[in-house]
Length: 378
Image (spheres, rainbow, N blue to C red):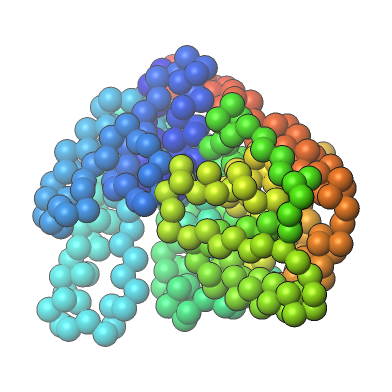
């Protein structure tokens, strides 16, 4: 069985799954259209940043040969090789550029349909994994969630037409995919009923061994690593920390931005607590990395999303929960904890990752699903 993962390295999750499928005897490769500054390793990078649009499209067309090279394709970030073109400011373009953009969108749409047609003709089962904004819709989030970063980001972050495109794309894949997974439970509100929650599995537990620092004799070291400050609630976190400092609390704040994953990992080892995100409703891949290192995590957990995760996982959740308006109180409570109690939570966090984010166990589940599909194909 040969599996090819396409077309991104988002969060390192495709690479983590592929690595552990290989450990289980599955021949698995990750292909990505381009590499980003996080530097998650991929087996094949299709085009470089300095490639022209024409060269990039030619390379992408050549990459379409993957259809004939694999037994199963595992799409990530909710898209195939031919990603939908999300043009955010089409109305403000000149007539010429608008025409070119529409022509390109039509081309991508046609090639995407051709890609799915070829996969069907070759009898290649499609697995797909939604990871966040590939499925998350601004209009749905604003209507259904009291707390959501859809109310904080700039207006063109979730324009209505991209919400519509995502819904159409989800319907398309629901008709074609043999298996649909979601890394974040809130996505299951907008995905088909057949979709399943799949925990983050990018962290190799041997590579991310615990580094318990909570008993070191120094001020508590609080870390925060935003990829998007508005989404993560960074302004509220910094404001709360400023106020805590004025109120006499002693701590060190470590803001981690612009580093590769390998570089950031070394910084994470030195912190005692991580503030993850205050609006998403779940914790991210960074939180899994931090808990694996033995660092307790603060995040907002949306109660109505917990219906989609196993009951035992919900009961085991070691996250310090904080709504955005309560972040000061949450941080103050942690600063007032004994270091021994904080260490206890750190150890529970590591145990939680070992139980619920063990990449081998998750890869075994995916392998079983893939074997079932291949049996059905025969």
